[in-house]
Image 1 (cartoon, rainbow, N blue to C red):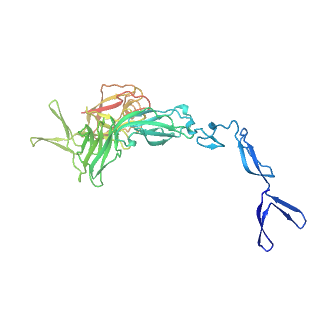
Image 2 (image 1 turned 90 degrees about the vertical axis):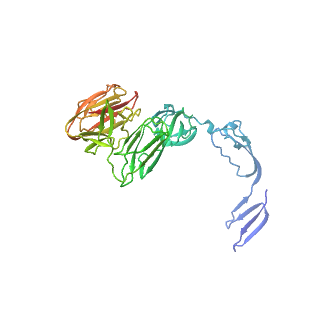
Image 3 (image 1 turned 45 degrees about the vertical axis):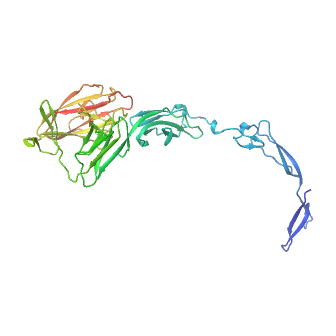
Amino acid sequence: MRKANVKIKNKAGEDITYEGVSSVVLETPEETKATFSYGVMATGTIDLDFSNGNQEVDSPDDELYNHVIINVPENFEAKNIAEGVEIAGVIGTFQGAGNLPRLNKLSISRNGDTISISNPSSNGNYVKTYRIYLNDEAVKEITYPTNTFSICELKHHGLNRIQVTALAPGFDESEKSSVIEVRTYSITSNLTQMSLSNEQVVIVEALTYSTKIIPDEGLFIPEDIDVTMGGNEPFYSWNSYVGLLSISNISGDIVVGATADTAFQIRRPKYKWEENLLSISPERYAEHTYVYLNDELIDDVLNLFSYEVQDVEGATYNFIMNEEEYYQSTNQSKDNTYSICKVVFNSVGEREITISCISYGESNYDYGIISQLNQVLSSSNQDDGSTGSTKVLRNFRGTPSLTPVDLVVTIPDGESFMYIKYRKDGSATTLPDSLRFKISY
């Protein structure tokens, strides 16, 4: 028997200590007795058995163990214990994370500035997140089911090597997708009392950069701006009335410079020589155009007709003049999109004009639409009607051609307008998928 000291309190509340006691007997007024003992200290043996789950071990009521021996069962193997954990002398080797199922590899594709992610059906509904890698470094995550992102959002200047992986709880990260390589160029503004509407800082190679240059309150858009691409002056479209700048086929870093005017300035008329004839496009607000030869006024031309190609508010893609002096749609190779513009005419008296159109693309899916006079086309990629209908003068569906088609239109006296649109569906692309048009009179 084990012995110990026992401390009790008497009726007066005083502590009384007895030393070397092995058992205690309490007597009650009814002469019943209760015996308390520390019990017999012994060595116990426990045989573990996990075949039926957790095991409970009970000691006999009359024994207290001061030494316990655990016998390891035959099926208690290191491979069933987490790596590095020791139980009953067995060190575990199970690598839990390394043995998780792995998600399958994704595929990615590029359309202009947009990367699209394709998740294989073999991944089921487990994928929760896509992780984007730029030049082998994780830079962004997007939450499923969103499956597209913009290259320009990554804001990297130079070569972009883009890959994507799939993530899900309980799964290893998938293998990286194949690589898409694309180069981006920087956009820098050197503006005085002006700002750019397009806040992106890079642009993808070979695409079109479009922005509006907006003067501070109380100031005006200048007639001229400075634009360089890769240190050289590129071909670009600049509408100084609305401040729209478009630069196609980007191949170098862009720098835009301009200073706001303190007062509105009438623009200089555009002109060119055609077979020894001087062709003048008058300024939209001027009533007369003066012609000078060697600084002497030689002619006063009354402006009888002018037109202007305008952007449509809220539209993502517009028309810009290309190097062949055709206005061209800017949504090339961009699925489920449309380019649209409004052509405003001002004429003194009735006048006949010719609109030369080149509509090309996937025959029944990507094509141009020309409105009737003073009819508005929808700001969407929907088809607005067939040729000769209430809204549509000409619908080029099913008639792709790289040869110009001439449309003769009679412009009435005063101001009038037409809408011109190129719509694309959501599938294949046949290059050059665009609508080009030129107006002559």
